[in-house]
Length: 368
Image (cartoon, rainbow, N blue to C red):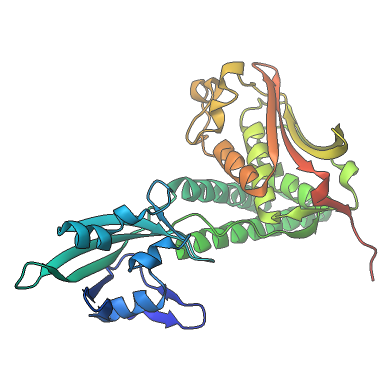
């Protein structure tokens, strides 16, 4: 087992989830004195891992189903009052860390008179349950820029292009490489947090129009291969900035365009658009992806956002879609606090819309 480290300033204990970390404690019941019997126990205790009944009131400790921890289910209380082995598992949440599961096992010890004299407690980190849907989404999204890189490399290697087109292809190669690196970094961050939910969106102001055109350009090689028209109608956001996670919004739009290209037959059209829409007392910005593809039956327009679920057109055709892309759209829009909807008619195409509230938008401030 590798050594563990303890950060006294943040009072967090860190270890490798692949290893077994068990803290052993001895509680002298009459004297109410707690003894740490090994290094793991000392680290757990200094990190604020709940042990005594008074510790259990901390809001960061929950039962596995998300409920509050009651005194009558606290393992030390059960062992002391009922005189039996008590076991339970809880979820501990610390600021800046993913949720961690703890398993408690407490054994009562009796004196010569049969009274409870001490409690022996063991606490173990339970391995985190990986968020496989998040991993599948990242792996799925990484394929998109990689496919663009492969297509552009093929074009540059086997076709003689005018200088202007070659320069454009090189710029698209650069954009695709940057996107691949960005998603790879997200994947690495996912692994660093032991495969649990990521640390949430990184919100900052950024210019919308360049992002939209960048995402569209990234998908142009796939559209070119299918002889599709890929167009932008994003003048409405020229000069506007959004306060959200640029990378995650890019993933949402990229997945919508990838799906549109995949399910639009040769000669069809895919448009990435931006328009303002009145809503109540204010306005929302609608970012939409429209296509002239196979469309989605009305009864499937909710289920297609479930992981690994594909509509009838995806099951009947020769599509290589995995059924992950729209699940990523659903998860990331919720994480960003955005809404989405879909309008589609089977055989006539689809329109996917992302709704951005005006509170998250502003005109770019003047250059200083």
